[in-house]
Image 1 (cartoon, one colour):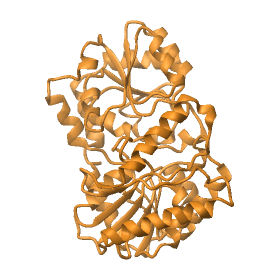
Image 2 (cartoon, rainbow, N blue to C red):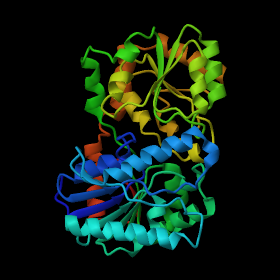
Image 3 (cartoon, one colour):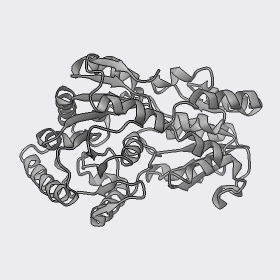
Image 4 (cartoon, rainbow, N blue to C red):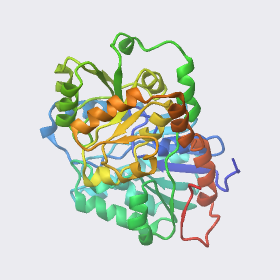
Length: 399
């Protein structure tokens, strides 16, 4: 990878390193840039409103965030520093936002001095860092537009949409990972690129060579239809999944991820298993046990503009893959996947996947993503971050 023209990056992450899956694009890129520069990854700044109606889910989130904050500043095993700053859930309260920003700025100032971060590249993957990031002294500002942020649950849509608008206008470079968002919004940016997600290809392919299986999935009867990722109402259609389980009673449905309290009832079905959240490194070893992989997402404004990383991870596993047409990025993979709209169509596609899983199809799925490694994506993007290609205001980096 080319040597960067900067010596430090402060990344306002879209997730929390201490309890979220490490497959996200900001984490993957920072892992690679940390080999050549000092990187500070700031765990996601609270964007959602305080909502006690979430019940047990709210208190679970509160406990894990508190633990993350108490971790303080630590070096991660990925080679970059991680900070969980204290912030308040007040993005929707105009008169309290300046106080929140002041608290964050003070924490960041102390850490920047400790790590000697001078004029860093400031990377924003969390819109709630908007004003803090724009007012910092920096080499350049990079905005990573991963999702339709204002469509997240429990956020103030107007406030978040305003953050997004300002960041696109101020950033020296805006990175879109959704072609839909890129097509719709790139003209609102100084410079914009479309960079599709990558995949830890070798990690997912090599898992199959290890014959051992995780104990909690080894005893589940096959065939197994599997999903890994977030298990909540924002993405998954529970009624759809319950109908699928009824239509295919002789097939085991396995979900790997932390379920919301509402989705825990899925485990009441005799052929549905919820195995809980696993580490990023464990995921391929669960995925290799799946006979068919699925994305039974509901359609919404958020999913429509999403680009799930698990698409490439499923294909790297070589497994048959069935999805609802909830997101437009799926259209790029129609030659190697099955798309179904109703539970009945979905069930038939699962059976087709089981019956048509030839060595040739397995190889075709892997070929589809073999060159889309995170290393290649990081190298492609580096030239844009250090300022090359300034004559091109809008472009794609996926050729």
